[in-house]
Length: 217
Image (cartoon, rainbow, N blue to C red; front, side, top):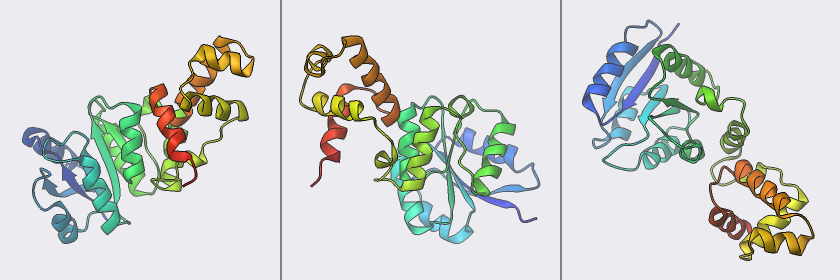
């Protein structure tokens, strides 16, 4: 069976060398090139033709998402996996939107890293274990399936949730929304909580921006 060829993008030399040494001990995977994010990453991808790109979420030199987007645009067949120490759900969703098919927490075990690499190389979507099976993981899968700009349209909102989103966009507080819709304030809070989870957002301001972005042009 052919080895899974990996391009590793990591700006910390010690971590880069450590990951390379551990992964290359296994017969079915091989890091065939490394990059610190400042050199010609796309050029290396053209030369070594990896199956998988393993990229650090927090590159100091440039935006990791830009690299992910560039790789996906030029090499759509290459699978991309992000790595991060303490990413938020929104951070991981951004990676998925940009074209990543998996994400590994840096406190993951070597077995978990290898499992993710092998699964993603076979076409699966792999998220960190605490998020697997969650509503967020379903949102992320929609993001991957629908493309970067279409993931929110794949999320089903109830009619009441749509009304609450519109009223938040109008600048209403929970109490004002409750009065307007003739429902209890705690019911409004519950709707807001569900909306934030469904859209993988973190604030009412982000809900208002979402409402503005979704308005027909």
